[in-house]
Amino acid sequence: MRAGIAPRTSLVASKQSLRRPISRLADSARRVRGDMLGAFHSSPATMPVQRVDLSHVLPYEMTYFDDRLTVDRNDLDIAACLGVDGDVSDELLVSLCGAPAGSDIQVYLDCASRLTFSVTHPGLIRSENRVSVLQTHDASVLELGTVDLADNAVAGLGAAMLWRIVRACDRLKIARISAFAIGGRKAPPEPGGPRLCGYYAWPRFGFDAPIPGLHGDEAALFQYFQGYPVGLADGSLRSLRALYATRSGRDFWRVAGSHRVMTFNVAPDGTSVLALQRYLIEKGIYG
Image (tube, rainbow, N blue to C red; front, top):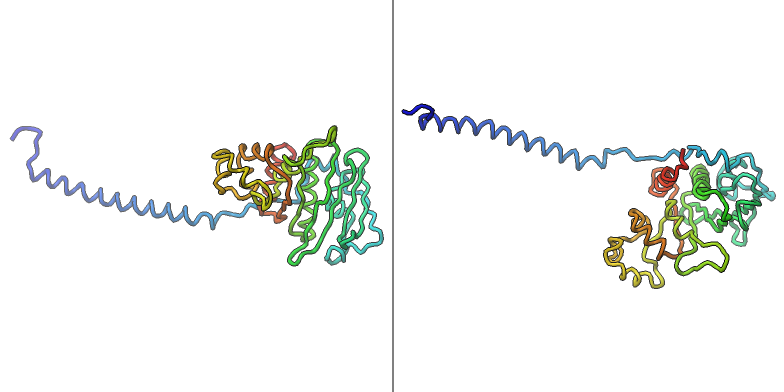
C-alpha cells in the first residue's frame, strides 16, 4: 500500500461519518429558516402602532399664534352646537379655527345652521379664513371653507395652522377634516393675482382624494404618462397619497393636478396625521 492512500473501507466509513453531521446541519438550518420566516410573518401583528403626540407644541406656535385671543360667540351655545358636554374654552376654539396671533374671530350659524368661524387678520389673511363644523350621519366633520393667507405670510404658516386645527379636532372628537382644494391646470391665476396652490399643498399636509377624478378628462390625461410616474397610466395608483409617495408623483401633480374635494383623517395613528408630522419635520417646523 502506497503512503497517503487509505483503504477503501476507510473511505466508505469516512463518508458515512460525514453524512450524519451534514444531515444534522441541514435540519438545524431548516429549523432556523422556519423560525425566521415565522418571525417575519408575525412581525406586522406585533409591531407597535405609531401614534403621533398631537399635544406637541411647534416653535411656530410660540411666535405666530396666541391662545389668549378671545372669540366673539354672538350668544351662541358653542358646546351644544359642537355636540359636546361642558364648557368649550376660547383657547380651544382659537386652535380649532387656526387663527394666527392678532386675529379677529367671529362665530355664527350659517344658512345651513353650521357653526362657522370667520377669521380675519390685518396682515396675514387676505380676505377671511372660514371654518365650519357640521354633523354627518356618522361623525362630526370640520370643513375648511376658505383659507386665504396673504402672499407675504411666513412659509409654513398653513401647515402649522393645520396642526393646531387637528389637535383641537382630536380633543373635540371631530373625526375628519374636508377641504375643496383649489387651483391647478384648470384654474390659471388671474392677471396680477396669486397662484392658487391648494390642490398641491393640501396633499403634502396629509389630505387625500381618489385619482383619477370621477368627472372630466383626468383618466384620459393619465394615459399620456406611461411609466412616469410608475403606476399612473395602468391605474395602480388610485389616490393622491399613493402618488405623493415619490418625488416624481409630486412633481407630476404640481404640473398636471387639479381641484377637488380632499379629506384628512384626524386619528393620531392614521396616515393623514403621520404625513403632516413628516412634512413639519422635513421643513424644520416641528422642532
